[in-house]
Length: 254
Ligand SMILES: NC(=O)C1=CN([C@@H]2O[C@H](COP(=O)(O)OP(=O)(O)OC[C@H]3O[C@@H](n4cnc5c(N)ncnc54)[C@H](OP(=O)(O)O)[C@@H]3O)[C@@H](O)[C@H]2O)C=CC1
Ligand SMILES: O=C(O)C1=N[C@H](C(=O)O)C[C@H](O)C1
Image 1 (tube, helix red, strand yellow):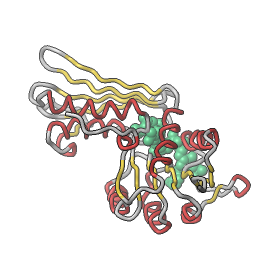
Image 2 (cartoon, helix red, strand yellow):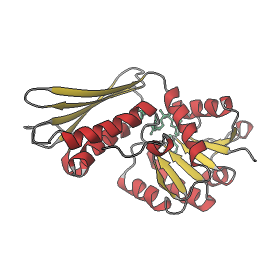
Image 3 (tube, helix red, strand yellow):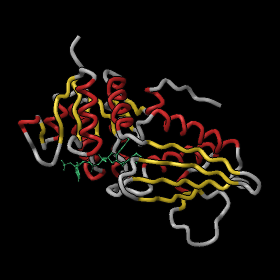
Image 4 (cartoon, protein in one colour):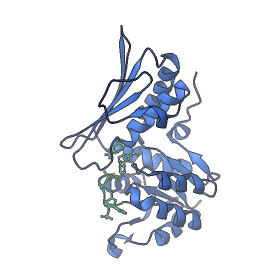
């Protein structure tokens, strides 16, 4: 059996570097990386197509502006795509969905297992606690270098609550909190400070009680570990769009 060949788009970034370490720690083959600055001595190319041709799976933790291009060239190369980059605009997200008919794509705003579980719980709470009685607010806190807001994870939590409520997040999402709160809104607040790795809370408040689901990542390795686990799981799968719950073998709960 030949060893799984994994590449990393965004290999010089905070998470990309840790994914490289995790691949090597597991004895897997790190084929190379993608950066805007090639470094052949470290097997780093600036050509996404060249990287993809030599890989079974590419872990993508790069930048939203690169995603539409990656979609095109990874589909041409026929490699698997573990996509953790967040902050995608509608065009990039549409490109991701389109190539998932050609190659296996695993998209996850958050590779941590605990957060994957939290999404299921958020959907259940959304379904159980009526929008007219329970106000949903999502608070996320990250390091000062983070580019996108709300975080991809916060949006995924909002989407899970919306799904439970049978509505589309786009119709109820509120980031600008000027004005009176309307029933059914899902509000987002983003804090940026220091080197905080990533914290998310979903707060549901009625007139008489409050329930909070919280997750705190205090070591970025939780994401690197999940990303590499996802790459191993994705290799050789049929084309399609997958998520971390598939990797964890979670079945749809009530
Ligand atoms: N799914 C998950 O669990 C997680 C997802 N993330 C997401 O992963 C992404 C990367 O995060 P992080 O590692 O902290 O970010 P970094 O900024 O540290 O790394 C991103 C890398 O992408 C490259 N890059 C920057 N701009 C561009 C561009 N315009 N086109 C192509 N490449 C570019 C840079 O490398 P170079 O200069 O070498 O080109 C940079 O090192 C973010 O979207 C973040 O939200 C982060 C943590 C967890
Ligand atoms: O940029 C980060 O750091 C993180 N980004 C992801 C997101 O936007 O949700 C996941 C994690 O919270 C860290």
